[in-house]
Image (cartoon, rainbow, N blue to C red):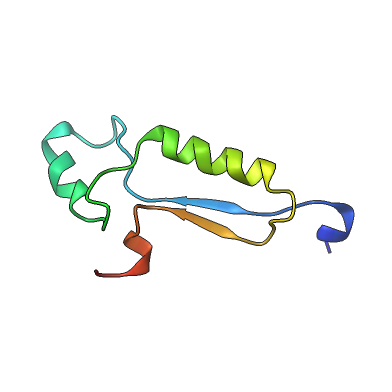
Length: 74
């Protein structure tokens, strides 16, 4: 019903992002939880949001920004 009015609804689902919320002592452990073997950076989330803002034909999507963690065990 919103698409007809050119309203898009999307979501960004972040994984473990390197922020002050996570103490540096556990960064290595957290990095190992994702197939890409690193924690995300705040810029990774910014880039995802900017992508969705530019992708005017994308709606109803959840964009997982989690280094592949949502894809399951590798």
